[in-house]
Length: 203
Image 1 (cartoon, one colour):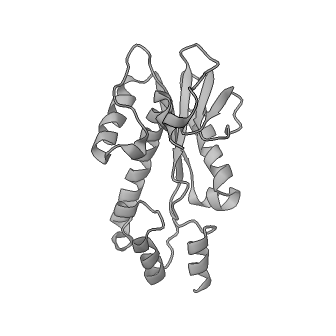
Image 2 (cartoon, rainbow, N blue to C red; image 1 turned 90 degrees about the horizontal axis):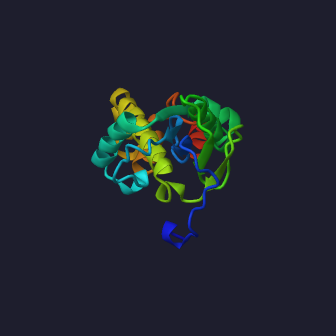
């Protein structure tokens, strides 16, 4: 089901401090899960906001800079690989979201969160399935989170170039799985994820 097939998005809030919230990095085998929260400024609209996965890297980076310049507030936060292993990816994702929401200044009055669950924050809001394609504030959050996490993977690639992190961004591609088998797990790998757990068992 695409965003076009979903019913129109009805928001039970008419003020200006509405924060879009999204995450990037649930599926990779390595690194943090990164969340962002954005309160857009109605007086300074940003053209071209869309689901970060539908944009080129160059377009995402240009929009990232524009969001940071024009938004009323934005924040990027994360939960580490160790926290993912301790909590599981579902709870760690919500932890990263709550950290991003808490870092907003001014504080939001209402949340629109991508997905089908709210992250357990005291600010009221609603979960929006395919929200990054249905509301610009969620799209803006997805862009900030994606650019931040991709930058982390490029930095990790510079330290460990044999794994190919700059190309696959930590997802379990054939290249990544082959490197994991050949070179073993790094401290940044998520020990609780199946391919990493299996590889650690061989050592």
